[in-house]
Length: 214
Image (cartoon, rainbow, N blue to C red):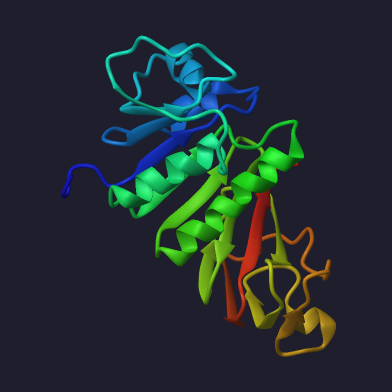
């Protein structure tokens, strides 16, 4: 793998209205893993995945010239999480997941939990479609203008001393130097970048960052 392939793309099976978004965001030398029926998206945009992992309960097992790992249908983890685990075990430090935001919120939330697995393994990971990009912030993150809005939530635990610079709403809006986010806090909803980029820092805890175009 070395220096040739640096990013892993996982294409999951949730419905996506805009396949062109996936096509336009898969770049040369990406290692592409499909979760179960996610391979159908790749076929539609003319991409043969490098690896397919699934129990094939939502699609037929494909006959494609790539590696295929077949899972038992009775299992503890989702197909997408198995793909994430495999990508991490193969040494990828940058993962982007497409097709992971769908109509079933339980599946979407399970996919969000995959981000925490990556964070624990020092792997950069996000879930993205045309309207949303979801990631986690530990310590510090720069937010660019790729999406119109962004929201912050305490993820699984309280977050202490959150500082936001370069955005419309900062701690100064609340007449504070920094903000503490409890797990039920909503004060981080619907912010937007006002400078060239925004910077978010958190002294303890993990923030869930949702960038949105809606």
